[in-house]
Image (cartoon, rainbow, N blue to C red; front, side, top):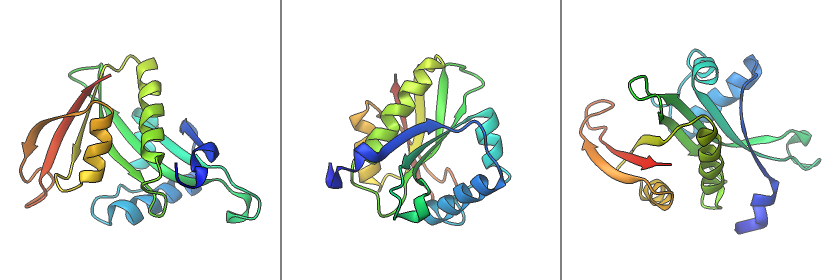
Length: 166
């Protein structure tokens, strides 16, 4: 793993939050998903309270980031009301500058461990068919392409629906 970064990564589910934390997540959303795709301070607390927000944190070294831990990965999930043993990954991303270092694998692996404790048996997500890096990551964890959905999130915003039994 590049830079041995894995040893400094902690993955945890967020249960407690304040406005400063929500605004940090909002900023990450915009930086990594764009203004249109990123969720805001109205939705983030709902995901935390009624879904799951699982984050990857790079532990701070004193001289870096003023000694403050850095959120470098985010996994936002909601549960399927029709199939209570199924969760949907709403957003999954690694902060720019930390990609392609194995952090996505760490975050997804730990997320699956957390979800199994909640009796989740199936995970679903949608991914841009052009995002081969993300598709390879998901396939590594057993996700299979289930369906191509045209215009899912607006005109020309096509997605692959991928499903994994966990």
